[in-house]
Length: 208
Image (cartoon, rainbow, N blue to C red; front, side, top):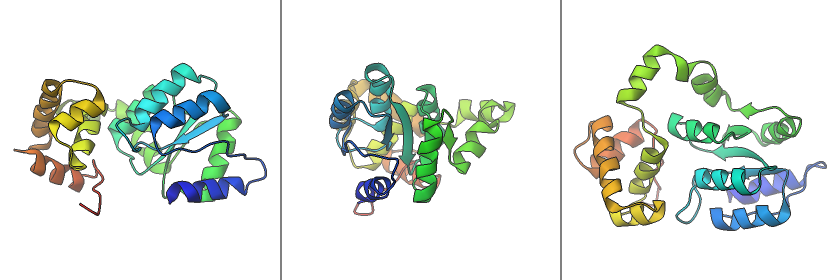
């Protein structure tokens, strides 16, 4: 439903053509290879085993001329940091008004970068560089991969499912879980998900 709404307001803009859309990373990458879009607007969470972070990484390698703008519900540091390290051109949250999203895309086409105010205040304005937060992150903050593991667990995936989705061994997932339990002060998967949800680190499906 969100994608339909985004396509609708972008299509109404006289200076914007939507040349393709997809709900998963593999199809989106194939479309981008064929259509060579100026901008790819993507989410963190996608259908299937691969995330928007995976898609952004592949786009940088295979469609390097495409600009990348993230539109997501995730303002959290691990996701933002992972995307910024990939050199995305914008990071907007889904509560951004459609008119501001459109203007943000125009700014990106003019060579600027765009970030939602929440992202800017946490990341751009020195958050990552202050001594306090460097120390804090060393103890508490999640890596981008830990955040992916945590979200998949919150989605109800087993360790085997998570390992398959991320293309790693079950042992690697167990190591990530051990680190997550330590950082979240949790004793098991359920407690980790509950504490993460309270801190806004995962999004829980209302149907669960």
